[in-house]
Length: 389
Ligand SMILES: Cc1ncc(COP(=O)(O)O)c(C=O)c1O
Image 1 (cartoon, helix red, strand yellow):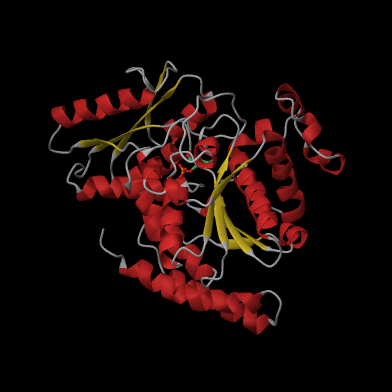
Image 2: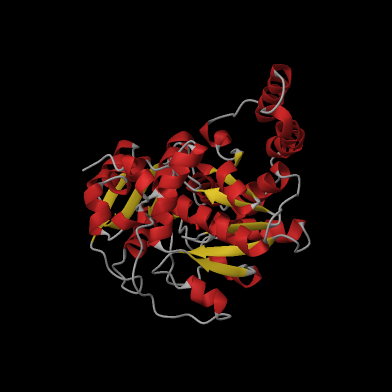
């Protein structure tokens, strides 16, 4: 894909803005103004919604940094227009289809997803004039179906069956796209296939990775995040390994019910998938094409229990003012554990994938916490945040 000159200049300008940022919030009003002016200059005007995807802030987490003696930084992906890290992948898989000539004006995008990718695609498709069709397992909440319909998507909830079954929602999405492409070749249709379409990983090689490197001025020791499709972990790992000559250590963060922790720590053995997690959007039963090239490059893996993730949802809110979903909280726990492994004076970066808004009715509900056996994981002084029955 051609280098976007707008992004390149953003990266260059972002470096000087980042330099100014070191002093911005500890110094004079004039320095603060200078910092804001530099960031605004770097951002310029986004030519449409898709131009506003990416270039998210990198936020220091002061309490966890003090606790570990390290600098722990979270990439604020909840600030993307669609509210999650998946906006980046959504834009790249659509652009990829355009570049391959599969989508023409008014064409149809089809994807199998119950979560953030659908939301990202809905925004991107509206902004670029495509129709969006979403297949999802019928076990998903009505809220998710309603939200996607509200964003203009045609939604098909279908029986929840295994990946190997031809009636799995992903294969139904694939067949739908093939059908429409045949019936309407003028406009075209594409199954964007987020799990195995490596345009997803490319989004993070070309944007997330360079942004992290620029924002830290190359001064980072480690990166960690969890995987759904694996696009974020693989793409950021690829970029950081290349640009640092292998110096930056990269770690997979894995929830219960995923096979990747044991895959990495056993040196490549795939085990049977067992159990589950409260985290949404992450955890994997196989090595996707997005992960294939890079999974061998990661330096290790951390396994994070649901107890630790839910506690961190509450801690991030109370201590850092960050209202995060469970996958982001899991990533923050992983960053803390990686920092503890490395010892003081290291910089560890992770991904704050999305906010808690779509999960609040569960994460902050007394009944839900009890039903998941997680009520005891919330420390006494944080119980005041359990505001829902
Ligand atoms: C909330 C959330 N966190 C993390 C991820 C994982 O990102 P990736 O698919 O790049 O591995 C997803 C993916 O859908 C997600 O929805």
